[in-house]
Length: 226
Image (tube, rainbow, N blue to C red; front, side, top):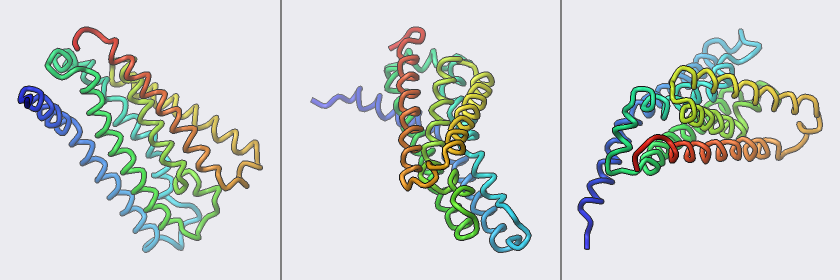
């Protein structure tokens, strides 16, 4: 037999998730448009003046910004303003609600990372060496973005307050990326490995998966509800 109640619950979940995520969609489109505009200005209007790339500088900070402004508030905001208590006592189980919200955030994160990577590949083409462009053009850039957002989600789930979660996300991301950069620079042979970007993608992707798993555990154990 059909389950109209279950269908209604899933329809309501999809509607609620879209309302929650639409600001992320709009922001993601704005970020991509902004990077594209900066790249156009750089390559068509100021190319002869630049010894470095301003567009690359913007893109290098993008993963941290996604973690701080997208990842951290995902759970911290509803926990801090107590709307999570209402959401999690409705017919939608808390883990299902979190999974639905996470899917939207994950798609937006990967979409923005791929779009920015494509833009930077065109903007920086044949202008700089691989050391300079690695962090924004290689596939590792996708791993950085996923890790930053997952870190923000976990911090928000564990701390339950937006601003502290943002600060922790930024600090931990900076430390991890600095440590990773130190390993690369202290081991020059790494730069001669064609699979270095894929190794980094796997490493940061693995960290992201572990953090998301931890966030699921925190959500499942928090407070009352289903």
